[in-house]
Length: 79
Image: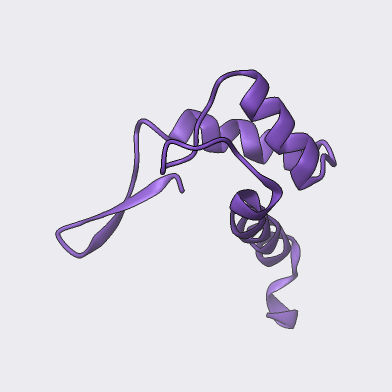
């Protein structure tokens, strides 16, 4: 979510980028996937399939965000 494949390359999906930014912000604020799903659904956002958000639909996205945080927070000598 937040990215699409175009001509074999990964590019940001401009329609999903604002929602992904909100998800990222909620992760930084320490929200869990259930809280994030409730917030997104309360704002009327749907996932890529047009369905309500669930913990499961957010799990991979949140993991990717947390992994990115860890990669950028780890000193280069430890990578």
